[in-house]
Amino acid sequence: MDRPHYAFWPKRLPHALTLPATSLWDNLATSARRYPDKPALVFFGRVLRYAELQRQAERLAARLQALGVKKGDRVLLDMQNCPQLVVAHFAILRANAVVVPVNPMNRAEELKHYITDPDAKVAITTGDLAAELAKADTQLPEADRLRHLVVTQFTDAFDPETADTGPMPAAWRDWLLTRHALPALASGTAMAWTAALDNELPLPALQVGPADLAVLPYTSGTTGHPKGCMHPHRSLMHNAMASAVWGNATSESVTLLVVPMFHITGMVSAMHANIYSAATIVLMPRWDRELAGWLISNWKVTSWTNIPTMVIDLLASPNFASYDLSSLVHIGGGGAAMPQAVAQRLLEQFNLRYVEGYGLTETAAPSHSNPIDAPKQQCLGVPFMSCDARVIDPETLQELPPGEQGEIIIHGPMVFDGYWKRPEATAAAFIEFAGKRFFRSGDLGRTDADGYFFLTDRLKRMINASGFKVWPAEVEALMFRHPAIQEACVIAAHDAYRGETVKAVVVLRPSHKGQVSEQDIIDWCRENMAIYKVPRIVEFADALPKSGSGKVMWRSLQEAEARK
Image (cartoon, rainbow, N blue to C red; front, side):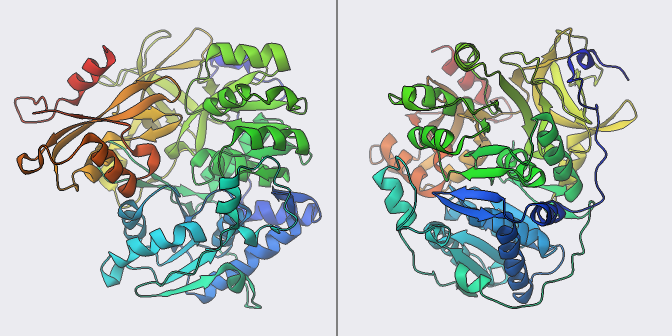
């Protein structure tokens, strides 16, 4: 069916893609066979070439098989961005297993769920995170515990003596150079990365294809526990291919990859898309504007996927004039709207059009993106390649005309199969519309006369802090474990830099009043949850507003906060 946005569709591109009948592993194997000596990953001056990337992944895959990993088994991957993450990700796929990516900011209390829910028995992590993972493991019943832990150090990926670190802060250097002892697993064994790769073990036969489960990323929501999104090889394959084609990627592309690869955008639109293209990936473990500017300049980066706060931060650097951004030909991202003034500066100063997109964990990153030649500012874009998206009335489920607000629904090969072990949640997430199965995004939006989509509100309760999605129910569930907290309601508060930040309205138990401060609550949260979820503001109250049925009226607190 013809859609209005097709008038703005890049003329060089088809509206849909035909997927190869291969697995995600085949993308790396193909690129390594075609470009064995080409740089695949760059990490503080050390270059890992495609043939060596494949060799390391195969060695680790053989080790995983020897540790008992079989087809369909879930393997935990808990790392900051580094070459070992890419090696481990593809090794898990080559072992016919399923990657369970975990946010490295998660603490032991959160990590327990990521071990037990996917029934993971093997985990791969970095030395700085291994102790937290082992701590979570010890708190589980023996039957639920990990059996094997593979631990790498950052210095396994580069030579500290010859590392080309640019303007790396001293704290960064200490963090990267520190080698951590292997932790003890309560009911299993821990193995060093170098020992894991040092083997001549037989490689398992590749048994997986497009329909097999490949990745199980977790997403939170209105319930307290995150849910696993079942993505087969084909859904990630589609968006990896489409992202590469949409962004004009070639084997000559050089990408700065700083968005985290545990997140669906970094994993699919950055890592998988670039491996598919045989591009060169310049890795950053975490954001630092001076290092980013230096890397773009030194490695002649051509493409950079980011969140808008990174661009704002880089442009504000006192050293910005010394950086050479002339190599950039593609810049874009999502997670939050790019301020119009910043997008305009990029256009006027560098002739770069910031290309915003939209997607969810359930849609393998983009379901929408702006056409590179015709982007609109502060806009989600148009339905992505092979994607059909509509705006419907969430009550009547009828399609709405341009300009009217409704729920965004999505159909296409990038949509996940369903939630892991959650048939009821899966059933609730989909509707039949126009004879097809559509995913209900939970986001409210509208289209304009040209068929471009704009986000207007949320149907679901969620806080967007610098592109990180924070789900209040999950934060509240963790906070209720504090002995002083009787009730807690988490809402969004305005933040000049992050857009939104997390605020908790807390009712203390009578026994703890006057003995616990707001800062005490914040400090406890820092110890028990990922830093981006931690309430920046805690406000004590005598009671929370409740409905006649006893439910906390979070919306009234949110509306009161918005009026401040």
